[in-house]
Each structure stands twice: as C-alpha cells, then as structure tokens.
Length: 156
Image 1: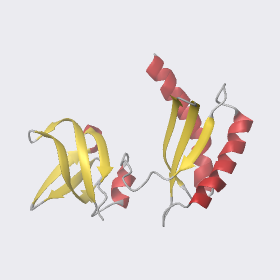
Image 2: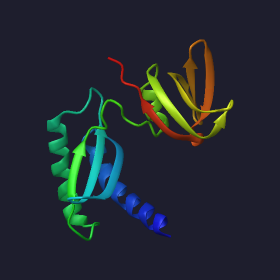
Image 3: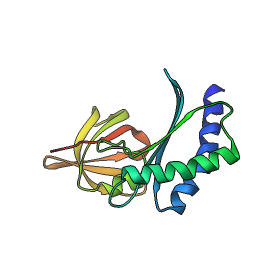
C-alpha cells in the first residue's frame, strides 16, 4: 500500500515536471523525493545533448519551482534541487542505453543469466526489449526487464 501511494505521488510529480523539461529541450532523467537530515528534498535530474551546465540547472529550477508552486503537489516544505545525473549516471530506459552506445557499463541483474548476475562490457546493441554487451570477444544479450541496476563506467 505504502509503495503504491509513493508510485502515484511519483507519477504526479513526473506529470508536472516532465512537460516543463521537454518544453525547454531537456530530458527528465529521474526524480527523487526523500527525507534527508535537513528535511525533504525533491531532486530532478536532467540531461540534454551536449551536457548540462549550472546555468541550465538554475534556469530549469526556476521554471519547475513556479509550476510546483501553482499545482502544489507536496503538502509540506521541501528543497528543490535540479542537477545533471553525473558522469557515472544510472541507465534506466532503452534510450539511456542507446545514447551511450559503445560506452562501458556495469550491469547488475535481478536474476542470473549464464550463471552470472553482474556483467561489465561495452554497449554493442540495443533493441526494444534488450541490450547486448560486448565483453572481450563475446556477446551477452540482457533483457531490459531483468536489469536491476546499470551504471556507466567512467574512464579517464
């Protein structure tokens, strides 16, 4: 029950925030709403072609804040933070994997494939329901619904 209430709340926030992001040519990567030591925080992670600047975050924060003030979906005080997902961003959707084709990722699965739950390799192919990694000289295809967590590996 508690999880369902959170999902409905998350959906409501997304319905407010995502159109604003799209209107100004940003992609809503993720939303996070949680209680922290200094109070409630709504984090909005955004991206765009060419990357996100501090100015982008400030600009979109102002737009989102105005709309949240009007629609007032959060019944108590909170802090709004708008930021980029960072270099080691999580990959959650098909388009996230597509955008990072050829890059190295670390994937943890919900259940084993070929006797393993963790894979590290380069994104080789993405289709409607799976991602294929190139690991050394072999390939492994992973259904998207079996991915628990996928993170880019930052190489310097």
